[in-house]
Length: 261
Image 1 (cartoon, rainbow, N blue to C red):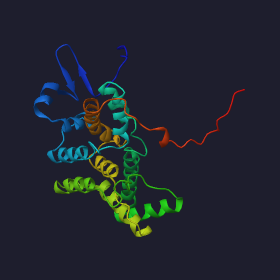
Image 2 (cartoon, rainbow, N blue to C red; image 1 turned 30 degrees about the horizontal axis):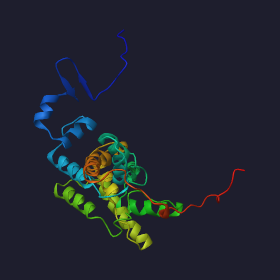
Image 3 (cartoon, rainbow, N blue to C red; image 1 turned 180 degrees about the vertical axis):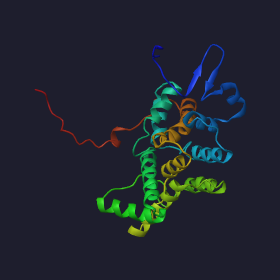
Image 4 (cartoon, rainbow, N blue to C red; image 1 turned 90 degrees about the vertical axis):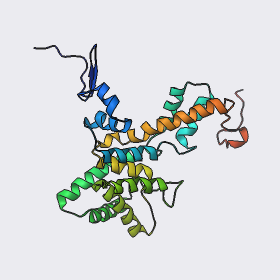
């Protein structure tokens, strides 16, 4: 019986002479694919269609930077402290969570469940959306991936990504349901709550066949490039040791001054 090896992976392998990823020779991938296509090879072990590459590329460009927000502010503060580029970028990536940049992962999981349920129930997606919103409102729950405090009336990035998906005929059931949910929310509440950028990336990632657990990867992979730009700019244009706050900026509400005597 062969001895069990300490590591197991279906992603890639190497020997003294070569490297293969998903069974493809690395040198062939280098000469024939772009970076976006390689994400399909890594995560799905297949070569994507040109239309799929176009959509995923649009998704990643849409979140590559958003000026000064939580992730870039943290990256800049860390960079200003004299920390190396990769650590400054990593610090910014660590801000991506349930509220900032990471809401799409949970939406992707839910959309995959809801689309499967609609199919099993023989229910049209617009009817399923109405059912979902009614249930969420009864439970007092919110759905991730909708609304944006900086873009309350809608986000042009979302419209641009959807336009690309429509142009190449890759609007699948997950994005369709996500858009119907936005419509159902407005019908039930009388208030517009459009799909945000996390939401459209999540829905399209599911339509492209990616596991919902990769939802945040399609935020932090491209955002790493944007954060590198912020870290470099901070290191080369600013004076260092960025002042975060002055004493006048801080409202202290702890114990009053007191003596230890």
